[in-house]
Amino acid sequence: MKDFAGKIVFVTGGASGAGLGQAKVFGKAGMKVAIADVRQDALDKAVDEIVAYGIKRSDVLALKVDLTNRAEYTAAADKVEAVFGGPPHLLIQTAGVNSFGPIEASTFDDFDWVMGVCLNHVVNGLLIFVPRMIKAYAHKTEFHVATTSSMGAFMAGSTTGPYSAAKAAVNNLMYSYADALKPYGSGATVLCPGNINSNIGNAEKFRPANLKNTGYYVSEGTMKTLGAIHATGIDPIELAEILKEGIENGRVIVLPDHNTGEQRAAQLRGQDEQIEDLCLTATEREAKSAARMAEMMKRFAPPPTNGDEKAAPPPPPMWGVPEGGEAFGQARTDLDWVDPSKKKK
Image (cartoon, helix red, strand yellow):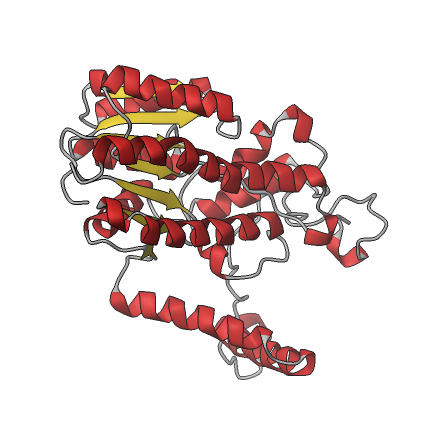
């Protein structure tokens, strides 16, 4: 898909972070923009930002939707057609949530919440919109589906189990749609960023009341810690521009760490190495992990001091840990089957 002007884009999670960046960039490219989010106050603020970015207010539609609710999502699709005259030419599903803790501490609520938003909402959007898009646009004009996934789709995450599983499934779905949509003159793209400057760190604040039973230790401090990590991530506008380039050039996977060929190749090599590691015996894996850790620690070791220990600066931190964030990624204290080293002290 190369021509965006005058067409319609629908962005989930469009009230902030990566989704808002996508709404701005594709709106600036001449598209009418529909954004969906579960938070009305964030939607109102997002509309003002999109308009300030140079998109006409009449070309922006904000929809408060629980994307895991199929009836609400279907009603939102109907609304887009009623307001803009047809289904989206470009569907971008970016809404996502995450929470960190040992996978063996996870509850049904943890899986239902994270996979409900990160995977099920993507399934809902594809099943609701794709038939409409095919009927309206196949062999007539360009149309495309895209999803914001994660580098977590390519690797195991012992403290991000539900999230990593959801993103791996999302990737596979998009590979399937990329192939399936060819006869209709369409395609699919999956965007896999490593870290985005977004507010996903606050996702726990918006977890539905009926899914609050988490096995993870969650506090204001752990959320601030996650926020500090994401504050170092790629800017949403830059990320959206990289996605736009990927869609224009028919990429199925977009790995957006500035998207250079050399960096993409390095990422893919890293994924291959991880698969190779998982094929090793336990003893071989432990030895390889220890060697990697020793090599990494060399980079953070202070310079030699000729015996003057006071002259040696401490190794730099990987990132700052806000007050109260020391238990980030740990389990609740009352889970008696979880190893004590994985629980809040």
